Image (cartoon, rainbow, N blue to C red; front, side):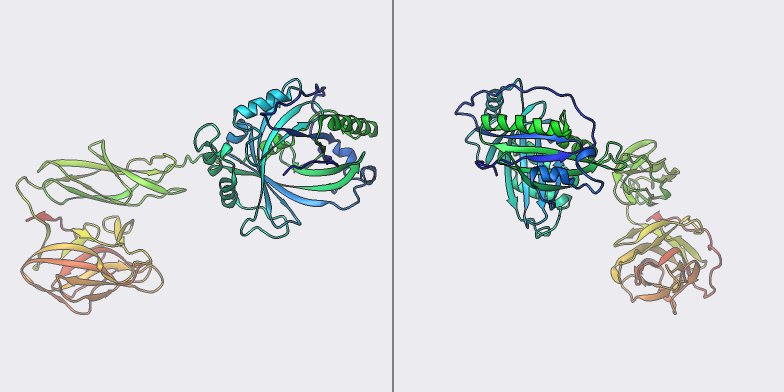
Length: 548
């Protein structure tokens, strides 16, 4: 915070940046009582190629001139603003500064007003009209007087202890913490600047500009306190660094500031150290440390594959497909019927209802990502709904006189974590599998409704494999009967596997369950046979369910 100065401070900083135009400053006018009362900080830039060495230290002749000694104090600073500079566009800045020897961080929220033709009163009145007057709690007023211009700074400073970043050292908080402490400590004038909550929104969406390290040498000049700061920042090409050396002192009155300013300018000019223009340090930092715009995501997701359409009634079709992939992530799928979009799904299933009986429909699916990229449509699949007036469950007609095959992905229903995956080696170009972490569960299953004729004892074979070098297993069960373990083939080897014993399926309706037993197991096809002869290859033609 500011205080009355018997001895005012002078800060000197250095840069290899290009010099700006010179200019004079008119004397400021008397400040009205309703406005804030400023002090004055005079700032000059010094030529870094002359006053600092290759290690960014102030050279001995400058140190001797101002009696700074050879030691300096280390600081780290970073600014917070949106990626588009919304705060800066409104004349505001949010600075977080840490002195190496301190345990706390200093937050500074500053609003700048240009001073035209030395009219300080006009700038103070503008600030007062914005609610930044002498009654604005916690704010201090300062006229920044550089080589060629004056600016009114109205600033609010607060020292805070930042959890995880306190103690000595140059500990700069990360982005999440920086946003949190900025929002928590910002004055209400900033939080509600152009509208209620405007500033809070900007701070919540801010990014870090920096951090930047600088060192401060403390000395004297004409009985005034004097500091010399050497800031090392990115150069314009962002291929290296350069130094900014800035000089400033603070005074309580205009007359003290004017006299000392003239004396210091004359001395620096005589020594050949003065940069006869303004180096806009904060502007350079905001420009050179601006976050790089992210590369737009233009990669489209892969094409969804393995689309299967099953007519579950005369008015409903169930769709299942294999997940698409994306360089970031697939977020959803758009489902099309006969070329028109009918809905979206965040999973790889979709139920289309309200259809017409005995009618053929064609379906495609398109994958989407968060950037709005759409995949090419999947291959179309066609399906015909059941005849009108037919209601009930879809059944697979299993005749005990033959081997009956069912594609695993054409289940009647499922619960839990089973997912469909593309498989070029599989009979239906897809299989069903259980992700890691699925666990052993009697409620985590694939369900197949069967209409059995010529009932008897059946062997239930699963064309299956495990996810790794060892085999895994499923449980199979019929109706409410016991679980029978089926041990799969090992990874990379599809094999027909069955329980150790047959299972009784009497003539009539039954429900077959394939249940999770070990996660990662995969099943491609099911075979039901009264013979113990193992099916070969991919087996025969799969059954198509019908409504009974």
